[in-house]
Length: 269
Image 1: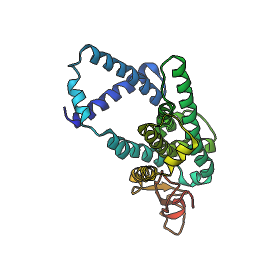
Image 2: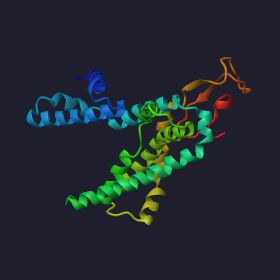
Image 3: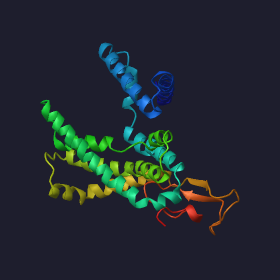
Image 4: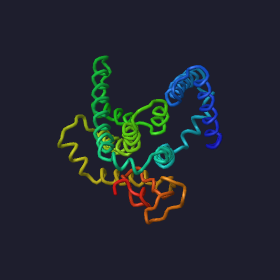
């Protein structure tokens, strides 16, 4: 089984799960497909435990895939681009301060709450996990999917500024989440048994942090060469002079805009 065949099977399975959700569960697509995917995963794990040789070919194929490259260089860029495509850059500029606050503080707060809760839960049931590992899990699941957020918000009538804050936060929290995850992963990898302000400061000031942040930013910038065209007040062509009509906007979701063209080119200005 080659990679192309595996991807085809995944797409077919996703389509079947989407149909089952639409036909019977009637949950929002992102939630319904996730629930059915979890059930399907449990089924595969059970099948693998009962008949180990049945899925041996799939296991061999999976070992040949570099999931770090697939996740960062392909999936994440596509998700961020799709979310940015449906976001009004001019309106995002107005709400940039609250979006930055939600994306940064929100991810850090969510990571701390989830990690602390998991640490308390595992300690309560007698299965001890180190606190950095629990925080690592919190950083892993804290960022939200911008496409799922857009799909859910489309079903509700909310004020535009509220929608924009939620969508903007879902776009930028991926970059924050990756950097937080990379930092905590380094702490876990180095065998940090506990967290202290001095230890975190030493890791943040280290060369590995700076390189990790730079690499994350460069990977997330994979979508930046794509130029979007957004309609303004009318359909007449506009030029760099700032006239109404169509303007080109750079989809630089990891940052609040480098210069594009016309009035919608920069989110920060």
